[in-house]
Length: 369
Image (cartoon, rainbow, N blue to C red; front, side, top):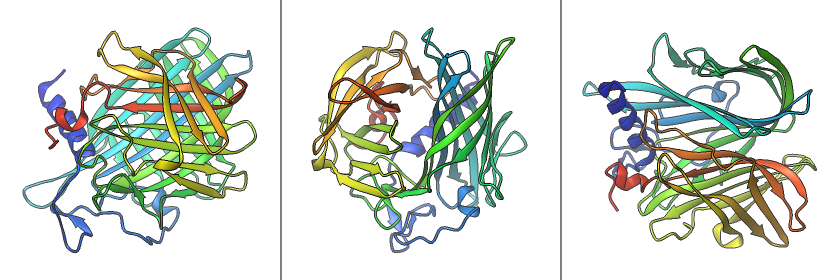
């Protein structure tokens, strides 16, 4: 790994996760001039599906479950990150990190790849509409039909080409347009989601090309910080139930292992109506841990989420779905799962993300404890 590129990558992740504690301009910007999410923001589309360079950090995240005509099942993830850092002359330099991953559920084979590029001819994110690129990985939207177009490879092993059709309204998570991640005003984001997209297209594996279809989930989030003081990582999951409803839940983890009060669970009805529950209204229980032979991290890869009279278990399709770390040095677990109800019936599909288990993110990156 080129040492200069690795330093850029570590800078990228450090700025992604470590909260900026000093803020100015009536708490509307960070000390170095990046925007802090404000309540009541008026969103305008297609512009707000695009990039927001006034914020330090932004990502477009797509996961999904695909079925081939021959009965084979696949899970995929494609995420594009944009990260800005302030230069001595006051300008902002943007870096673009991207991840792709693919799981063959039948064989348990899991492949993944990372990329890091400076903004320019090889990586960009439009401010006019959804058009993000990192090499030959692209995510765009047809502003007339609202369809999304995704193309990505995983090394030379796989090529995924998909059309993604929103079948439910866009969801805005948080109160008054702001999704809080901690007590600090800057520990927040604007968080937009297409909770269900109909996916169709092709998956090329070596010389074999499969026609695939299924459901996908897309998050678009922008902020200028994520982890707050005392937080060491997060657990997050997106559940898509067979009855046409969805659920998103995130658990911000504190250094003592407890759940931060900023954690939330949100249910999404068939008509797109959402209902949010605070941290004390749901539970997150670990069932199975898996230790990575590469990073040594132990991840709680099978968990149970319970609230009111409902209880769901997320069961991974395979244990080893650890990725990342080749460039950043900070691996995480991001995996395709089945959703089981209290009776053990499979009632949906999900993706589970576990970050900060390969080491305290704030400690690793020099944050205050």
